[in-house]
Image (tube, rainbow, N blue to C red; front, side, top):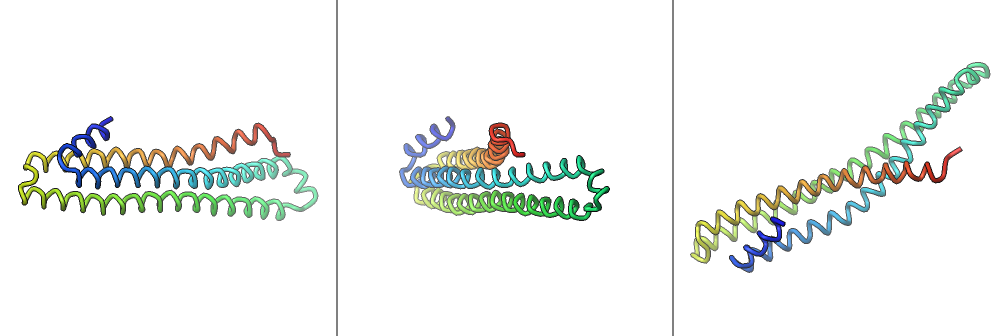
Length: 177
């Protein structure tokens, strides 16, 4: 709601400033949607690896006596270690993607913020806008920026959790032997 109201006030204030703000918000939301879908897929893959690892650990513990009897304990330990390494690699891939996503959004916001503030100061110097308008632009932009980043961070973690939920539901629907 505050983004819509601020955007309308920006349009009333100056069209160029509102175009920069709305352009940045549009690109920000588009990137969140595209990157969020990829983050959900990576989270699903990582959740599958984690589920497989947990299954391997449970199997190893359940078969501990049998393994000791037949002296294949090193095979079981190596199998769990390989599953664990796979899960760690997939977890790192997912976290790295989410951090790249946040970094890209930060750079985009920085470029938009600098250009918006530069134009605001220039317009104030040219008496196109007043000092009050300039302060409004600064405070509104920083408020919208905070809201957008909070939403983006929460979206990244939401998609991560959706990947975990999808994997859990898949296991319930199609149990693994």
